[in-house]
Length: 224
Image 1 (cartoon, rainbow, N blue to C red):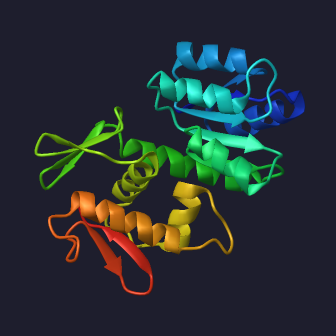
Image 2 (cartoon, helix red, strand yellow):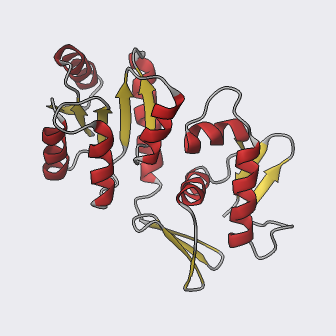
Image 3 (cartoon, one colour):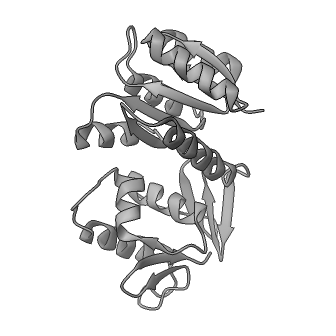
């Protein structure tokens, strides 16, 4: 049974989430402010956190950042009534794994939860290797034959998402949504530029990549 911590100051919303998730077989704990949420996340080690952004005492963004600064890699889904793109980007930059804007459907929520839990399972070993490269998920570092590879935060997030979905063809739009939190008509050139930078740092021959492969007219596939 998976343990879920719901950090939500709207008591009606929190109760509805608890009842619905318990019916689906989850064990649920509730916290009604950010400080309580941080304490419970530290003490009870939940498998996943549903985290409201607008909280008393400590905001959801601050709570998320603090957990990541402490090295806690608990999957986090942000829940908020704020739907502006910049709010989503801030949530993802703070370390959230996904983002849902209220109101949302319960079926969508549980589907997102299952997807995030599956992805987090890919990181249970904390390290992943391909070729001469080792990626340390906990320390957010990569090395080639023992030498550190300097990656920006966005490049690392992109690499992790590719690893999590290795063997799967990922469209540019899906990468934009997952890594940058962008939706709609955002410029997919952003993805191409970051892929090019990753290839230069990871591939033996960036012009003929072995790991991050282009799927013509579709997107990219990680073959590591």
